[in-house]
Amino acid sequence: MKFFENRELVVSTLSPVHIGCGEDYEPTNYVIDDKGVVGVLHALDAAAFSRDGTESLRNDLMKALGEEDAVGQLRAVHAALQRHRGLLAPAAVTRVRLCNGVLAHYRQTQDARNDFNRNGIERTAYDLVSQLPYLPGSSLKGAIRTAWLCAQGAGRSPVPRALTAQIDAFNRMIEEVELANGKTSWKLRASVSKKNYEQARKDIEKQLKSAAERMEPEWLGGDFQSDPLRALKIGDAHPCDADIEREVRFCLNRSRSGRRSQAQSRNLYTRLEYIGEQQPAAFGLTITLQHLEQIAGRTDHEGKPLAPQRERLIEWPKLVQACNDYYLPRLDHDLRLIRALKPDSAWLAHMSELLAAGLRDEIRAGETVLLRVGKHGGADSNTADGRQIKIMLNEDRRMNNGREEKIRLYMFDSAPRTNWYCGDNLDSPADLMPHGWIVLSNPERAWQTRMPGHSRRIQRLHRAEEASRRRAEEAEEARQAAEQAAASAAALAAMTPNQRLIEEFKSSCAARAEQLMGNKENANAVLHNKARELAKAAHEGADWTIAEKSAAADAIEEWLPKLVKIDLKDERKKLKLAALRSGCAAAKP
Image (cartoon, rainbow, N blue to C red; front, top):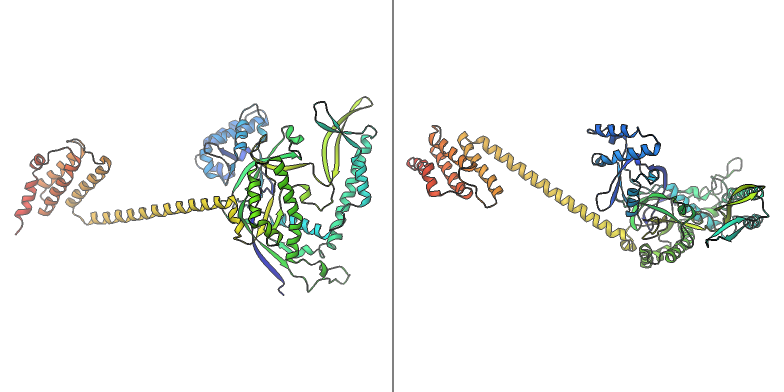
């Protein structure tokens, strides 16, 4: 048996993905092009401000820094950048589309009455060299680890029974009441003091943390050395397409009934850069699984384990099954939520078609790995079944000894009360999509062609091929023109001065013919005068040969009637073309 095996897989996105990197697109380092069909964010680095021609921009920036308050400075700096976006946009290090709702919101914040300070955009994880998004291997392994942990703890509760009873008692310290406006709110029971309530919460948090620290070693069989997942190495997933789709959208928080969350009701929101949904084979990665059978169960001289026990070793089929058993019910749950909140969801229709086209069968058969990665995937998708989640509720206020007392209320539950969605509008999004759903598979699966991103990629490839063909044709035309110019230059160099005069006259006539497009210019204009000058030079030049004079006469008689409004018979007499030719005839033997 080989010590390790490698698997080359591709990652297809099912829903929008955002993996935080701790960086934002700030208004001081981007410009927005909002003149086209879609808005485009052009991200800048320091080099963009040192280009030639940026002196005026730097002066504008210095003036902007003269604003009195910080928000005023920020608005003025961004306005200065926007005025010079024609200069800055070509120097952008990366470009990202804005959805229509984000673009409209951005335009609204240009008004001084709105809060401009909210124009930061959270960036997804990206490669420092290419500036393209990628999926960190650690994020993928974290999703796999959650599923494997849950599989190893099947039938076991991550929360001790005594702690579960304590949590139930804590949750009963608060009660839900109906307000005068018909809405509901949570209140601390009158019999419970703020001090006792907060102490009970802290005790539960401490015990939950302790239980979580014990859970992984117990369920997986020890520390790092004996952890079976040490044998799994997952590389970063880098994009297969340099034009991978990404867009800035709103991150929306909705209750189970679809209502806006408390934060969004107070006009708090966030905007994220998302890797687009429904993109087949968007990333490629390598997964390495080490085979530790030969050292399984070994210990060092102190009796400490050096490797996992044989019965805990990972096998690829079991790992895939653990992931799919954990994530597929959660995906179906998300589909049910979207169907209830947005029955006409386009994303839901695409997902239903995709699953029916063979993806669900491949997931069940273990041929494809279903995962959920990144930010806002929901606490229930990155914890073991039965784990308790701390849920923040509203703030309660009541009088205590004549003073108002503020109490932040919480609840512990196994399921969240709100969910995060990706949308194109804060108030009425055209669609709602969950975060972070991806699949790992072998390349070129049949269901991949059913993804909307597949047809968009084909269109991009066709446009790229057409652009490449046009560039090749233009290059060939330029090459031929250069060859013709070189040949003409060589021919001119080999001519006598008189022959060059004739050739220059013919070239001028040919160029003028393209401009006139079948029309003629009046007599006594430029070409007519050039013909007269050529004829005069041929008649009076002592160094003109008989052949050169005849060639001059032929050129004049060929081009002049085509381009100038003249009577050719009269012109022959005036220019004495017959005399030029007669000299040629007389010279013949």
